Length: 253
Image (cartoon, rainbow, N blue to C red):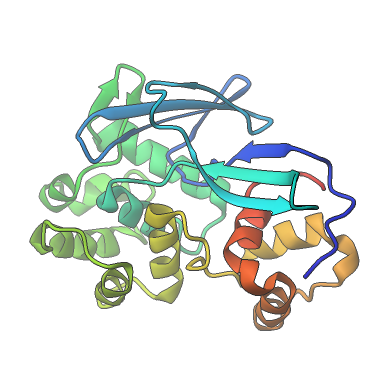
């Protein structure tokens, strides 16, 4: 377990890791469909502070709170879980292999060209039904040639899936049977919908970079396998929380 005695008190950040977050002046904007069918809107500043939302009863969940004492939290990470399973699946597929900034770009292009309009300036990613109906070339034109076979396969599974929510372990097993969705994508998808970052593939480059930036003196190795072993030892029983902190975008502790 790392020494947290030097952390700045009450550091708080809202995660904007999902590629649906659009860059705008001074921050990022996201809209998404909630379970009740309503559209949720939120704005987060570049400093990671939540400044606006369309519903005060839909605050971002605290997913990590690392304390230096029993009385005072030093780091708090908040995040809105993705409540639409298809949106999480699509995002997990789009994020495969490429950098996070490139995934945001491709996700945004596909949404703006092919998705449903939420407002005149914001569209959601194409639904599973739209993915099945649209020709492959539409997605190729959006830069998703690598991802489109996987999106099509996932959409076929999704439209045939039970309407009732599945237990996370059952869902993970079923997602892993979809062609083109491997363990990395399964972990990303489950973490996205559950906000439980123990599922997240913590040998991922983004976790490695975050860990090396935030804890430079710990000597984390560069190779994924060696890093994963060291990271699990470092985080201990707080693996989900420390992984969320590493991914949160906090510049320093």
